[in-house]
Length: 368
Ligand SMILES: NC(=O)c1ccc[n+]([C@@H]2O[C@H](COP(=O)([O-])OP(=O)(O)OC[C@H]3O[C@@H](n4cnc5c(N)ncnc54)[C@H](O)[C@@H]3O)[C@@H](O)[C@H]2O)c1
Image (spheres, rainbow, N blue to C red):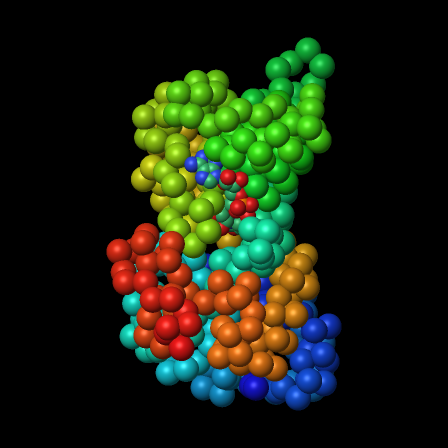
């Protein structure tokens, strides 16, 4: 197969989808790599580090020649024109948040495979996990910075110092993002509480981190109460493939302390805060109801070297499998990988996505 690596064009996105150390394995298996000039540059991987690949000058050349386009973020409007029948796009798609893209993939019969919906039999999300670890670990860093006076914040130190109050740090969703955020925030001295609707998850966290992380079963009443006292809130909920549930309502936000902060990590799936708007790395916050809102959809992009390496480590075996075996074989023999297929042969093949967008769902085997 010809595997294409275009340069990412989403605002402030600096990651690259495949790092140089993974190229040899793909080539040794008989595949060709076409990469856009400078695709890895901002992640610290110059063109010279990619050996035995074809380097082309434009994105168009990559998209034209590749059977399998491997990306980081969902294709942007400017990339829609490159879509063609039976092309495979393997990337974070987050289609529930971008209906235009979903319809375009369906219209052009593109096979859209989303990293974030690939699910193992135990329910884990192996290709979302590395970026969730990074976004989770970065979110207290983002919070710490935004709370500083020199960033127009309220001038509070997350952990305080002896004789002052540490910040109350609420994490809504105790999965990968949530737990990683909680661990870093705890290490920085904040007073951390995790909310989740899954009691088993809370139990596991409580048994392991008893004393340092508090857990609360999420109900509207409890969340309203805790949010009204918090300095920092992290939105980290997920229902795989679906739009994020709006667990934090405008009413809850309007009852929060002035200059408190919400970092809605779940913004890539539409956001867990009612009516929240996306922000960017270069313009990360806005204020509403006197509360600072931060909703960057590509948080790991700001640590592009670590994030590209972590992503490529996780996706490599999947890319190799796909390139060696093709989509049909994957659908028939690799049920877990096939959970990543969101669009195939003009159909939406992920049930939660179809339900979120009000589109017809067709089982992936039927769509073949
Ligand atoms: N912005 C970014 O750059 C970035 C990067 C990585 C991940 N993410 C996003 O972060 C979100 C979380 O990802 P994750 O890997 O931690 O997912 P996860 O599946 O590991 O965890 C999600 C948690 O949310 C809980 N949950 C679901 N509905 C809930 C509700 N109504 N109330 C409370 N808890 C609820 C689940 O029980 C689960 O524990 C996803 O939307 C993911 O796409 C964003």
